[in-house]
Structures are given as structure tokens and as C-alpha cells.
Length: 452
Image (cartoon, rainbow, N blue to C red; front, side):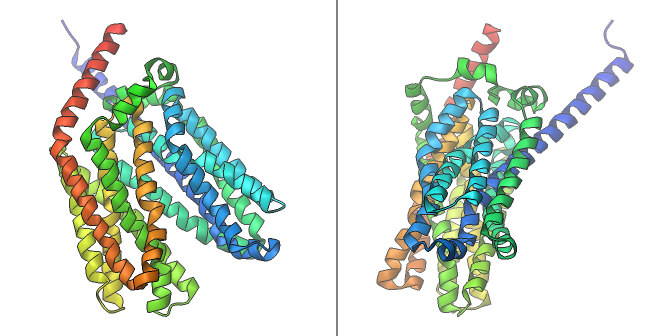
């Protein structure tokens, strides 16, 4: 005659417990991968804290010191896309573990380096290991949560890089001062090795498939399915670049981050020249701006998901609103006389400027099919680096040589207008492209159900 009341209550209770466990496990996955991203940036940025020690002990030139930092960025830029493509095909969870093990071991090798050549080789492998951490890690996280949280998760996860950079410089400097520069590298390496050990023990493809949010199950590429479901390379490239709104999202995100990285990179020099701050104090103030930027990624991501929970198209609108608001705040700030009001407006501008990271990541994840999430997010990372992080400090410096640092920083926020324009163009095609993506995903799910 059907289920009894007791059986029904038991089933409801079981599903409630199961859902609670799945949610708890998803947040454990997030915490571990967030810690891996922090380890990534701690290992990357600890070098900056020990520059004076290396220069003194090995007699290095500034060019050699810069190469030790630049080699990591170069390898990340070159390998992000191909490594993410491989992870989509081979398995994201185990790929991330291998990458983390490589950069942690290479950071340990930095602490054991006997000369500049050894250090350069170790830093080369740090860059190789870190190349696809952000894109692959985010893809794993997004597979563990419902799609309605994508902007929040993208912003919150990416902020781990900012916090890791601050910790790498701050803790690295303290450890190097008290125990020597080698100990600074060893400390960062040990942190990474401990995190990757817990990650490897707790996060597996099978556990994700059994215990994560039911609505995200189709997005989980487990080891057995990775090879079977992977797309041919031409089809992958068409999927990554095929939708116009997807391409506009890449470009808009990259240009907006030009503003963020230019302001953060040159803020120590600006405070030193216009506020007469000592170099250590101006560097600390810049570190605070990095934290503000990380907080902005998280808060704006949460706000984006909340406002667009019933209307996905609002994500795009919020992205260009963040661009325009940051432009207004920063341009107003940099036309004020030095003082607390100016610093407050600069902080507000940086807080909002970094807010586009969440909406852009959510747009890419929504428009790209789940099987290529790592590759699509790697393309977003590539755009962020090639259009934002890499050229911003250099081009701002070149402009400053001609019109002064203040004049250059007053011009930089105008790039956000171009970013806003690209997000507006993305918005015109977003709903159509999103509907096409949903249709394609439904066809694939139907085919999968039929095959099973």
C-alpha cells in the first residue's frame, strides 16, 4: 500500500543527513583547495622577502633577482592552458595533487640551492607546478557546489591568492630575519607538503561523485570518465572560444584587472613619493591593499550570486557596474590631495575593482560545458595575466616616466571603461549563449543516460 509514516520519516531523515554530509564535505574540499592556492602564492612571493639576503650572499644583480621572480610568471603564463587541458582529460583531482607536490618540493629545493643556477632551476619547476593550480582547483570546487554559488565561490577562492601573497612576503620576511633565508623557503615548502598530504587523503574523484551536491553531479569528471568524455582538441577550442559572450568575458576580466594590478604594484612607490612613507611602511600599506582586494573578490562574489539568484543575466550587469564604480572612485581619489580621504577612496576603488573576478568566473563556468571547465577557466586566467597582471606594472611605469607617477595612476582607471564596454557587449549575447549551452548540456546528459 506504499510507505508507512515511519519509513517516510526515515527516508526524509536519511536524505537530510546525506545532504548535510555532502555540504560539509564540499566545504572541506573548498578549504583544502583554498589552502593549496595560498601555498601556491606563498611559495611564489616568499622570494621577494629574501631578495636582500640573496643579493648580499651571492652578489646577484637586480636583473638576476628579477629573473628568479619572472621565471615563475613566465612558466605560469605558458603552461596554464595546456596543463588545464590535460587535467580535464586525465583527471582534475589527481592532477592538482601532483602539481602541488611539485611546487612544494621545488620550493624546498630553493632552500637547498647552492648558487644562482640551482635557484633558477628550482624556481622554473615552481612555475611548472603552479601553472594550472588556479583553473584546475576552481573547476574541482565548482563541481562540488550548486551552480547558483559560482560567483561567490570564484571570488572567495581567487582571494586565496591575494592572502597567500601577503603571507608569503610577511612570514617569509620574519622567518628569514630570525632563521635565515633558507628557512623561509623550507617553511613555505613544509606548509604546502602538509596541505597536499591532507588533500590527497581526503579529496578523491570517487568521494566527490558520491558525496557532493546532486545538482553538480554532471559536472564531476571522474577518472574513468575523463578519457571517455574528453573532447577532441578542435572541438575543445571551439567550445572555449565559440560563444561571443564567453570571449567578451575573458577580455573584460583581463582589462579590469589591469587597473587592479597597476594600482597595487605602484602603490608602495606612490606612498613613498607623495606621503614620504619609509619603504617598509609603504610596502605594508600595499599589502593591506592586497587584502582589501581579496575581501572585495569575496564580498562582490556573494553580492553577485544573491542579486542574480533568480535572474542569471544580472551577473553581467554587476560586472560592468563594478568596472564603472571602480573607475569613478579611483579617478576621484587620485585627484584629491594626499590624506586619509584619498586613501579611503583608493581602498574603496580597489575593493570594487577586484569584484569582477567572481562574475567573470561564473559567466565562464555557466557558458562552458562541464567537461572543459578547467580549460575555460585557464583561458580566463590567461586573459587576466596577459591583459592585466603582466603588462599593468610595466606600462604604468613607462607612462610614469613621461608624465609622472601621479599622472600615470590618474590615467590607469580609464582602462575600466574599456572593460565595462566589453562586459556590456557580453551581456547582449549572454542569455542566448546561456540557453544554447543549457541545450547542449541537456543533449549530453540524455545521451549519457541512454548509454547507461
